[in-house]
Each structure stands twice: as C-alpha cells, then as structure tokens.
Image (cartoon, rainbow, N blue to C red; front, side, top):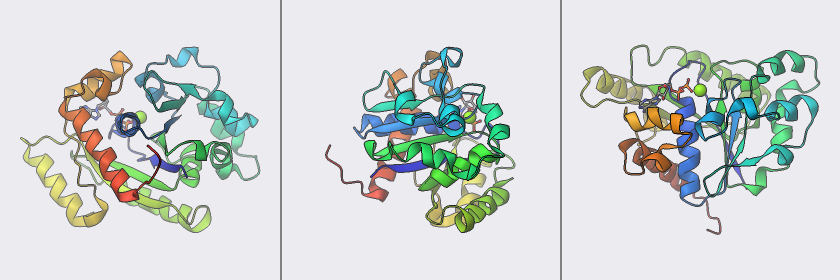
Length: 259
Ligand code: ADP
Ligand code: MG
C-alpha cells in the first residue's frame, strides 16, 4: 500500500520543495518506489529534479480538471526508484476551473487512486497557499509533513494550517495524520535557531521529527544542477540529514515491502 505524504505550509520559503525533493530522492535511494507529485504552479520540484517546466505539457492539473489518467503522465527521473508527476504554470488556473466541479476537493485523490499501490511512497510538494489545490493534496494524503524554518516568526501561520488540517480531518479526510513537524535551515551557531528548536519542541513535543535539517549550501545549490542533494553531493550534511529523515519515516511506518 502506497503511503501519500503531503509537504505543506502556506508560508513560502520554509523548505517545502527542498524537503519534498530530497525526502523523495532519499526514499528512492533506500530502494522504496517513490513518486514525487509537484502540486505547485511554480514547478520548483519539477525543475529541481531536472525537467524544464517549459517543456512540460501535462501535469497533475490535466488529471484533476480534464480527468486524464495519472499513469499516462508519470515521467521517470534520472534516479532509480523515483518517478515524477510534473507541474507547469497552468496549474494556477486549475483552482478557478475546479470551483464548479462536483467533489472539487477530491480531484487529486481520485487522480492518484489508480496508481497509489504501484508505489511505496507518494510525496506531494504543495504550493504556498491553503487554496483548493492544497486542500486537494491534503484530502488525497494519508499524512502531512509540516516544514518549519528555524527563523524569526517560525510559528507564524502554523495555527491556521493546523486549523485547516482539523477541518479537512472532520469533513474530507478523517484518516489524515500529521507525519511530523520538520525543523529546517537550522544553524547550530545561531542562538535564534536553537531558540526556535526549543520553542517548537516545547509546543509540539513528539510531533517534531528527531531529524533536524541544517542550513546547507549543497541543498540550496543542487536544484540548479537539476539534482537532489544526494546525487549532487551524497556526503553533504544536507543529503545525509534527508536520508536520516527518510529512515525515520520508514521506521515509524514500519514499511515492510519486498526490497
Ligand atoms: P518552499 O518550497 O517552502 O517555498 P524552498 O524549499 O523552495 O521553500 O526553500 C526556499 C529557499 O531556501 C530555496 O532557495 C532553497 O534552496 C533554500 N533552502 C531550503 N532549505 C535549505 C537548507 N536546509 N539549507 C540551505 N538552503 C535551503
Ligand atoms: Mg516550494
């Protein structure tokens, strides 16, 4: 059974895309069949694993709005065990076009249902909004990872996100769980970073992943090579930390699959 994990936070720049790409690549490196779904019209996850969004003609958008078969738009990546459903800018229009569709919150769930069991993990990179596409992602997902940047105003907007998750749990997807809160861009030298870690752990306790993602230049430069950090520099702190996160998630889910 494939597990669908959405990476969501309506705040921009907190590390959603970096986490989605590098978690997906790390799960693939551990030989779990993984699908990365780019659900952001900015298509950063698509370009981050080596595809130019300008060359993309089909995306999750066509599955949600036009009922295209997801299996037909999956593309393979240069990484073993990792596939991609890409995005392109037209996804912006999807929200408007979906407004009048019946079950408009369940379009992504319907699109992913036929392919779900072909994968061990499906990772959805959400856009920085709580709009209809993100609601679709959270309705399709089994769980959500919430990246929180170790910076000023780290907790800003988190209440609203948690409230949205509660509403989705009560109305659309009772099974939605919080996979964990992921602290990102941690800088051991900064008192502020350490304060944020303490504050978030105090607030959310066991909801916080043990793995903390450090601020690491290999993570920020690897998308310009169209590669996840593990392919760009496998020994970098960034690559290793996402591999640790993947192991933590696998352990937590005790995924017993033929390897
Ligand atoms: P989001 O998808 O939430 O908007 P991104 O993953 O695109 O956030 O990250 C925002 C910016 O921060 C990007 O330029 C990215 O390369 C950089 N970044 C993200 N995580 C790290 C990290 N751990 N270390 C260094 N730079 C990072
Ligand atoms: Mg992003």
